[in-house]
Length: 228
Length: 304
Image (cartoon, rainbow over the protein chains, first blue to last red):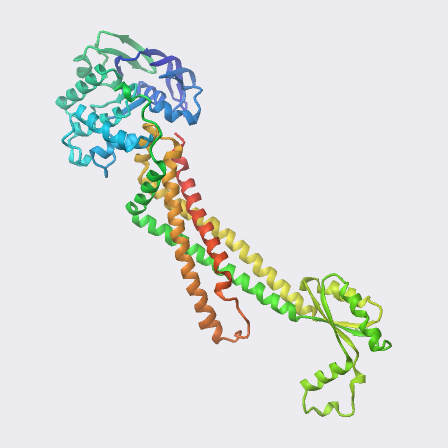
């Protein structure tokens, strides 16, 4: 569960990124966070992942109060999250299998667990036949699938996808969104940050719209009409 | 999928992972590793050379100290028996290692022996000389105080010591020790700085990897350890190479250059006498520089 209560964020240079944002995402939800560039979407993501702390208000993610969390506890909070980025952020000199296994290895999973879990997740994202390929040998859509598999492999409670289709053509974008929807149906909460109106409107999901650091709409109708 | 929640425990043999990743990184970033080892070798060689110089100077001064004595002449009014009795009083003086009594006859024989066939001694005998004590001291730095204390012993008519030589020895030792200490400290800091910057370049190449590790929930310790292992191995290899080179350089300098020069009369320490402590010092400094350099380099990437 993600809960923002009257959150303010002012950066050191004086930029007021969030001006009293409140919302709650319950377990199992699929939510789009939409808004134009500079609206505060990235700040919300950074607050959820613990990269920055709120100036005021409270941020609670999967039971962790991020306003008062100890630095040493942050890795354990992050293990409840899976993050997918627009630019994939894969390790270039490791193949598909190793990129996904890497996420398990760094949190101390055993080889046995890795051998069990990684093939399952790669099959889920449709990459079970591409395990030996390096990222540069894959298409953009396939690379994003690897990134999703990596985000998924540690079985997080929440997957955050930050502009996951920004580098993809419409057909691949739709595939990625459908994959995220499938993951959500399997029980994982999904938060997709995007500004792609058509894509959002083709899914009937909850849409939180933000602009100027404030939430301007939050509806279940799955409609995003804001002009970017 | 929920069965996986909480099952991914810290059961993996982490030491194996750290060592594997550390070694892997050394070969993946071969040039940077080579550069790091070269820096450690160069700094240790300079540090080692100055340390060996300081140790040799100290050793030579110690030898000279044992040969640098105070001559205490006994007053003419005392008989030989009375003169000998002063030995206890002289040896009771602080810094006196021992006092060796030499009669005027023994002194005369020794004197004449060293100036054989010299007509100047004709018509003279041992009565022109006085009984004396050859006083050996512990610390050459306190020679003047010791000389004054001996002069105060009743029955001692005069004291002779080469204070200028002892002062020279002490000054030389102090200068060499101070210069060596300062140089070793400066070189340690320089090598730490260069090492950390070299590792920084390696970590910069891996900043995305580190960011991914942080993102998926790796602890700072887990991220740090492979770098520590890497620094430790680079330090170990650098130390051993530096030790072997130091050995070669020392033998070369002592046998080839000094052996044929004007200071060949000085006795230098054999390398074997300092090999073990020097190897330990090299390993401690080399691995210390490697590990601390790595820790400094990675610190900034772990703040998030």
